[in-house]
Length: 84
Image 1: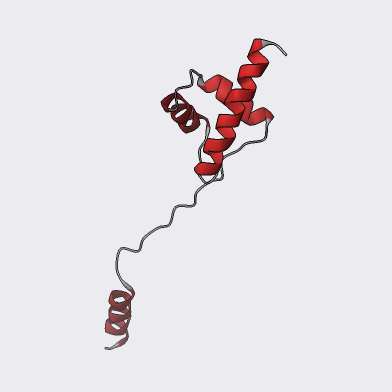
Image 2: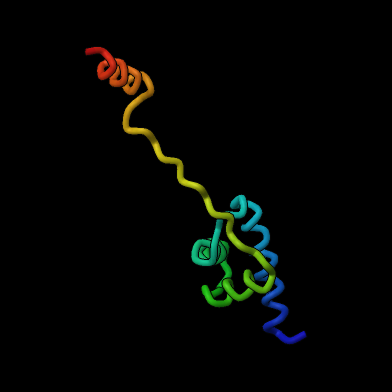
């Protein structure tokens, strides 16, 4: 194995570790940031290439919308409209 392949395997091990710790939500930019904080000198393209070739993809997080008013306020508004 050449030097690049050996370092790719080391980086891939770190990617898999951080991916599991992040509950599979970290994509390429955030993963690169985490690896740099861990002391690895990697770029986004390398991280993206390793993630893509090893089928490591972030799971999209669904945003929950909050209602602007509570259920009791909605019930009060409905009853107010229903009474003449």
